[in-house]
Length: 233
Image (tube, rainbow, N blue to C red):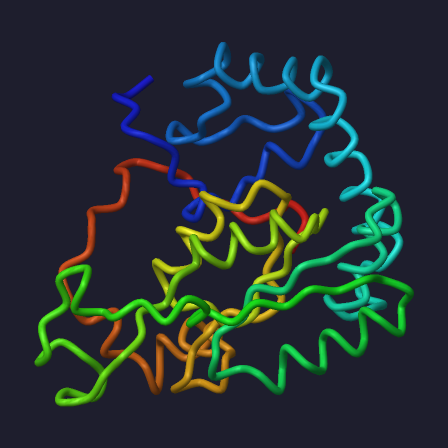
């Protein structure tokens, strides 16, 4: 096997992982033949950790029950019900108040208790953490920094069992994921340019947003067969 330098599943057309073992030969860059011990440990984790196993099972059941039938907001509620979670948290951007309110209304109508926290809670001056005035969105004005750690702490204290992200900025969402004690899912990924539909840049990367691919890219693994087949997801 050629040198393995990490998985590159996005280049695979075989999708051997979607079939029964040894049904298809995976390409050389597949992690299954390269990292069998690690993947065996992962499988054992699902079997030995009751909470991990339960989340994995109920998420799979949620997927099957609503596949191509229901919206993501409905899937969030279905999954929460399957897990027995009744108190939801929403961590949202201050600029997506209306979306957060709409989600709160939907979750409450679905029988859930809901707490919502905007990203500016705490009103921490950006300059206190080292942001220069010229680095602000609006130089010359006071600007509160986004505080996803604060959002996580407030929702934890409120006793939320499942947290939903609505429009947190790139990086801020990373901090929220890291500090939230409750499991987290995403309802809205922020993209102000594309109306919070970041996938549109991917769909148009060969046309309108071609500029995004017109820069040096990492070389593809050599000699790989990228056949077709497998389930389209």
